[in-house]
Image 1: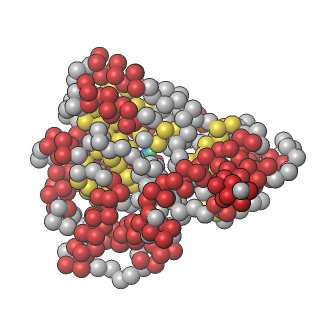
Image 2: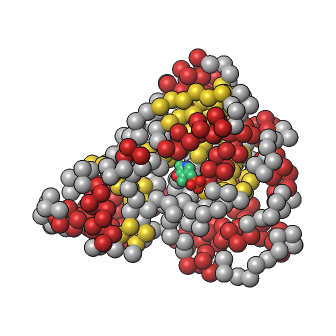
Image 3: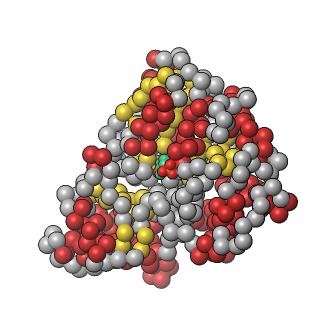
Amino acid sequence: MLLFTPGPTPVPESVRLAMATPTLHHRTPEFEEIFAQTRTMLFRLFATDEVVMLASTGTGAMEAAVRNLCHHTLLSINSGKFGERFGKIAKASGLQSVELKNEWDTPVSVESVIEAVNANSDIDAIAIQISESAGGLRHPVEEIAAAVKQINPKIMIIADGITAVGVERIDVRHIDCLIAGSQKALMLPPGLAILGLSTGAIEKMGEGVGYYLNLASEVKKQRQNTTAYTAVTTLIIGLRAVLEEIEAYENGAGLSKLFCDTARRAKATRFALEAIGLHSYPATPARSMTTIDDVDASAIRTLLKTEFGVNVAGGQDHLKGKIFRINQMGLIEPYEMVWVVNAVELALAKLGRRAFDGTASRVFTQEYFKTVLKEAQS
Ligand SMILES: *Cc1c(COP(=O)(O)O)cnc(C)c1O
C-alpha cells in the first residue's frame, strides 16, 4: 500500500535504520554532538535567528508559540481546522482573540488582515498557517507579515509551517516564529516539533511563559546543545538522518532541488487530475498536497485503497466525504505519483464516470518531464 496521506508521511529507510541504534543517554557528549549537528542543519532549513526542538506534536508548538509570543490579543486566521485551533489555544490560554474566518477553500486577503490590525490596537500577535492542511490551501503569509510589520513591527507573526517547512522556500524576513512538525514534511514518526524564532521573538518572550512549554528556558538550554527536560533522543537522531538525506538530495543538489521537484510534482498532479475532469478544491493550492472536491470523493478514496493500493486522506468536519487529499511532502518518486493519478483515473472508470484512456498518467508525465521531452524533440 502506498501511503499518500498528507501526514503521516512515509519514513525513509535510512531514517528508520538510524532510529534503530541503541538508546543513548541524553546528558552525554555523544548526544550533545548529535544535537549540535542537528541544530546546524535546522538553521540551514529554517533560516531563522534561533531554532528550538520540542518533544510534542505540532499542536504543542502552536500552543508554546501563542503562550510565549502573545501577551494580549491574538488575531488568528481561520480557513480550516488548523487555523481554528489557534483561536481555541488563545481562549484556553486566557488571551483575548479575534478571528478572520473564511471557507476552507479561501485564503485570507492581505487587506482584511491589515484592516483587522488597524481596528484593534490590542492585537500583539497574528497566527496563521502557511499551508492550511484542512483544504490544502496556501495563505499569502509572507505578504501579510511584511505588511503588518510596516504598521507595527512589534506585532509577532506566528506561522504554522507544519506542512510547508521542507516543502518550499519560505521567506522568513518578517516571520517571528516558524513551526514544523515531525510527521509531515519532515518524514519522521510523530512526537517532535521545531520552532524557528526571530531575535524579536526572543526579546519579547523574556523569561517565557508556562513551564514545560516555556520557550525561553528551552532556548537557553538548546544554545548549549542540550534540552530543559529529557530530549527525545530517538526522534532527534532520526531528524539528523532526515536533514542529511535532504541535504544530499540528488547528489547534493539539496533543498533547492527538493523544493523545485516538489513544486513540479504538485503542479503535474493537479494538471493530470484536472485533465480527467476533476476539480482542485482550494483557490490557492499549497504545494504540500493536491486536494480534489468531488461528489464521489468517498467512493474514489475507497477504490484507491481496496483496488489500487493507494492510501489518500479524506476531509474533516463539513468536508468529510467531500474531498480527498494526496500528499506531496517528503521524498516522493515521480513514478509513484504516476501510479496515483493513474489509479484515480481507474477509479473514475470503475464508477462509470469516464472511459479509461490513460490521460492522467500521460498529462502527469508530459508536465513533470517537460524539459526532458523538449530536449528530446530538438
Ligand atoms: C498536522 C497539522 C497540525 C497539527 O499537528 P499535530 O502534530 O497533529 O499536533 C497543525 N497545523 C497543520 C497545518 C497541520 O497540518
